[in-house]
Length: 66
Image (cartoon, rainbow, N blue to C red; front, side, top):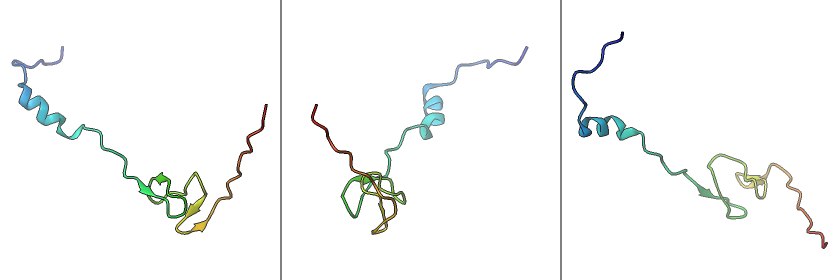
């Protein structure tokens, strides 16, 4: 059988080990064309612009009356 610890680790020791496990908020920037919040260095999914020029043509969906 594998060895087992003789004593329980303290809460402080446990928490110090977990000090780097916290989630971080995503770093968002505003799109220079439409102002939508996007990840940096990524083509805007809303308007298709990247670094001030259109890279992807985004088709607009027409709302049809039912």
